[in-house]
Amino acid sequence: MSFNNLDTLYRQVIMDHYKNPRNKGSIEGDHMTVDMNNPTCGDRIQIQLQVDDGIVKDAKFEGEGCSISLASASMMTQAIKDKPVDEALKMSEIFSDLMQGNEVENEGIDLGDIEALQGVSKFPARIKCATLAWKAMEKGVDEEKQG
Amino acid sequence: MDVKAVRDEFPILHQEVNGHPLVYLDSSATSQKPVKVIEKLDEYYRGYNSNVHRGVHTLGTKATDEYEGAREKVRRFINASSTQEVIFTRGTTTAINTVAASYGRENLSEGDEIVITPMEHHSNIIPWQQVAKETGATLKYMPLQPDGTIDLNDAREIITDDTKIVAIMHVSNVLGTINPVKEIAQIAHQHGAVMLVDGAQSVPHMSIDVQDLDADFYAFSGHKMCGPTGIGVLYGKKSLLNEMEPVEYGGEMIDFVNLYDSTWKELPWKFEGGTPIIAGAVGLGAAIDFLTDIGLDEIKAHEQKLADYAMQQMEKIEGMQIYGPKERAGLVTFNLSDVHPHDLATVLDAEGIAVRAGHHCAQPLMRWLEVSATARASFYLYNTEEEIDRLVEGLQTTKEYFGDVF
Image 1 (cartoon, rainbow over the protein chains, first blue to last red):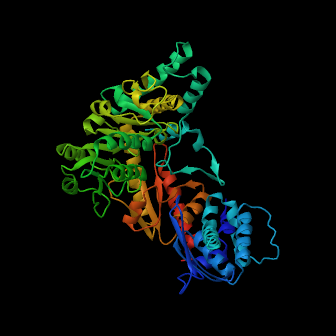
Image 2 (cartoon, rainbow over the protein chains, first blue to last red; image 1 turned 180 degrees about the horizontal axis):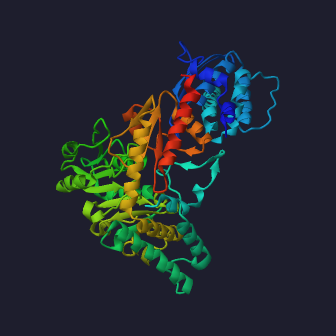
């Protein structure tokens, strides 16, 4: 494997999110918090969501981990902000397909920067890093739905 | 030691990974297997696979001889006084759990103390947490020196007449620290406590004499010492094992089974419920022959040389942080600048170099080091200085690759 292959993993936009994370920090006011670990590697992420009338009004994250897991969290919070919860869940599904290396039907949903993570699918050991934030978001939304 | 000849014994090493010759630096996680072990497993399954200690047929006798022969090889390898003191288990984890569940439950009560260290592998922490919760005993941690070693004065301080069990790893899988387990066993015995040693990282790499160490229990795994996965050993002093209850009940370990109660076989079979790990034990026997032929002192000296060379070369890299004491076993745990160990391991993997990244099943130690994860290069008898050069080059590459990010 040459650097070219590594470059499919560490795309510039990913490194930018890692270096300059968007939505890192805490939400003031009402919100839900979900903590999730990757027990095999020690990565730790906290997602905070503020959901009103089925819309993700705000999303932030905290945590420690590798470039892929933190960049993915940054991209996710950016992508789901101001979107309906159902659309956020749909994105998560699409993202999961993307990680499996499957062809994805976007169904009109704009993935934005997230598509840059497509290269992760070629590095099976790193897929869990990329999906950690999404799993945390799903868990939070599920808990909210169950009231 | 002729490393080239040793490498020829390991078929897996002679392959390319991601377009580069494989550099395998993850033997602390699991070692590679020499042809002799692979062929022994093949011979067993093709030639005399049978259940042991049952029936009278010829294959069964041959399998029993090989299985019990492997036990004798283990006995000699660690200098136990009798094969009754050598119990085959699934690995180090099962061995420690057996002691915690049997000796621990029977001998601990409120007010008693178990002493371990913050450098332990999860396998030598959680069994004691659980048995402490069940029995009301207290779990105590011996402090570590800033370089990740144990000061015997701390051992003398924390081990008291309330201490019933002291459980410590012989060699740290993260720091490479070689712990003074013989001296600690002495202190434990002065207070009437028993000493369990987690030997997962020591038995593969140095000559072990359980009688000289005066360990009451000594646990280790086959797969880290050129043997198959799924086989390990619990050594225990006969006087202690005799008093202990089995943890698993069923086939193999019984004497008489009545309708409402039963009696157990004598040692060591009392602790080997179910069809034993026959192929695993036979393979472990072959691994012991292989290591003994080369010589544990030779292997230790070789690894020492590699560790010294690696430290010397790695320290030259700017931003390199190495954890653990100067004097160490054959492994180096480190972090490089702000590059996360996963990212580092991915770049090295692209260069064909296999290292471990993560918490190494030692989360309390990671917190003690104040890091969330580290990378680790670990060496064995088949590694070379050229491979360490490849590692150092790979680390330079990693720095270049992530250089513009940080």
